[in-house]
Length: 379
Ligand SMILES: Cc1cc2nc3c(=O)[nH]c(=O)nc-3n(C[C@H](O)[C@H](O)[C@H](O)COP(=O)(O)OP(=O)(O)OC[C@H]3O[C@@H](n4cnc5c(N)ncnc54)[C@H](O)[C@@H]3O)c2cc1C
View 1 (cartoon, rainbow, N blue to C red):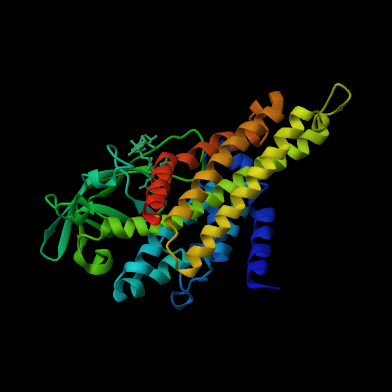
View 2: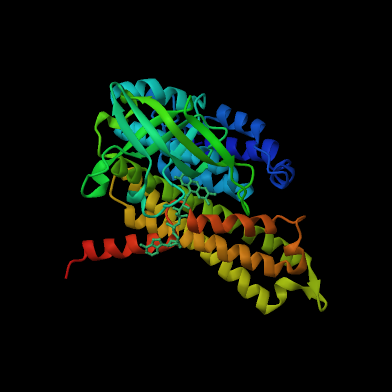
C-alpha cells in the first residue's frame, strides 16, 4: 500500500469514528471541537507539510490536497484549523532563519503551538499594502500597534504570522512590510469572537496589538521589507488548500443529491428520473470532477517547485465556484428539506460562500490569472 493510501485510510477511520457522529451537534452549537483537534494532533495533521527533519509528515501537496478534500466533505471547518496553521509554518520553513526553524517548526509540527496567519485588517483585506499595523524598532524589540480582523484560530491559537509595516515611508509600499512571529502575551489581546453565517466551530477573531513587544529575532527571515512577499508565497499553497476544500464541499453536495434523488418520489417515480433533476446531477458531477483535476494539476506543479500562481488561482476560482453552485443545486434537489436545519445541505449552503471570499477573493483570482496570461504570452 502506498503512503498516500495508508494516510487516507487513517483519515477515513478518523472521520467515521471521531467526526461524522458529532458534526451536526458541534456545528449547530458553534462549538470549538477540542476532542477532534486532539485527534488531528495525533494524526500529525498539524505537521502534514512540515519537513520530517522537524518532526512533520513532509507530505507532498497533492496528498495533502486529497486529505483536505476528504475532510472538507464531512466538515469544512476542520480543514481551516490546520490549513492556516500550516501556511504560517510554511512561511517559517521557506523563509525563516535556521534558529527560527529549529525553535518553531517542531512545536508547530506536533501541534503544541498552533496558530495561523494575521494579514487582514478592518480597513483592508484585498489591498494588503494598505495595512496600518505598525512595528517600531525599540532596541532588541519591535513595538506593535494595530488591529487584525477575521483571524482564523484567533482564540484557540497562540502564535500568528503577523503582517506589519516596519517602514511607513517605503516606496513601493510593500518594501516597508514585514512578517513577525507573534506569540500571545502582554499587549496582544483577542478583542472579540466574530459571528458568521457558516464555517462554525472554528474561531474567527479580531486581534488587537497595543504596545505589544516582540523580540527582533521573531522577524521571519531576519530581514525587513520582505513580509508581503513571504505572506504571498504562502498564499499559493493556501489557494490550493481552499480549492481542495471547494472540491470536498462540491462532492458532499453531489453525494447528498445523488442519494436523495433516488429516495424521493414525485409523480410515481424517483425525482432522479425527472430530466430536470438528472441534468442537475450531471452538471454537479462534471463540475466536481473538473475542479478536482485543476486542484491536482496545481498541486503537482507546486510539488515540482514550478511557479503555479496562475494554476493555483484557476483551481481556487473554479473549485470554489463549483462548491457554491453545487450547494445551491443540492438545496433545489432537496426541495423544502434542503431548507431544513436537520439536513446537511443547509450547512453546505452556508459554508460554501466563504470559499469565494477567503484566501483572495475570486475577483482577485481572475485578475491574477489575467495578469499571468499577459505576462506569459507577450504580443
Ligand atoms: C471566515 C473568514 C476567515 C478568514 N480568515 C482569515 C485569516 O485567517 N487571516 C487573514 O488574514 N484573513 C482572513 N480572512 C479575511 C479574508 O482574507 C478577507 O475577507 C478577504 O481577503 C477579502 O478582504 P475584505 O474582506 O477586506 O474585502 P475587500 O478587499 O474590501 O473587497 C470587497 C470587494 O471588492 C472586491 N475588490 C477589491 N479589490 C478589487 C480589485 N482591485 N478589483 C476588483 N475587485 C476588487 C473584492 O473582490 C470584494 O468583492 C477571513 C475572512 C473570513 C470571512
